[in-house]
Image (cartoon, one colour):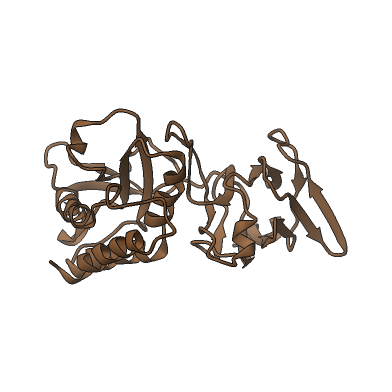
Length: 295
């Protein structure tokens, strides 16, 4: 067993044995899972510029009809910094490269697919293809040589102005990120799944991590908390059904964002505004038109 894969196996095993989780040995088979990861990485490597070998950066974990209590447990187990880091370290140790950070999705199935066999879950690496999500790094694979990449396409910027979010209170995957989508979701967890069907309801582009014990800020953020909508060079903050509310602090003023506001409405954000999600706090920053023209 290669060292880093052994660390992944131990991490999964410890999560099962630690208790306080809805997952058991019937839900996760750590040794089988790391063997699947090893095979999938080898199956999805491709050669690109300067004969460097790249590995697909999109990982989908397929689950067979987990109960509602287990969906968030799977999300927390696989979408955490430690698991991401181990995967990327293993790929680098093999001498391979990534075109983007590892993106992990979870898909629940109500019927057992042949790939499951006797497994409770199976993993699948894949290359985001041209014509898919415009916010992802996509590739064009060589149809005549499955081991080669013909071209790589950077994410398309969907907004006309430059704006960033800086997380001041709360734990997220990125403490600072640029808004590059017209509809930019904010909430707890990267993938929001329907508890019964397992269907992905939405992806949070700024995702707060699962709250640890005593983590009040992250616990106050709903899975589908808010959205920033870009309209021309303006940005509007909408509450998409949060439990603990959304507001904007601007100087000495506090602007409350109504829940479930229709698209195109909400509070227009200004440079320096403080976005408050429950008890989490994010600073909004935007370049003005003069600065954008100069750069």
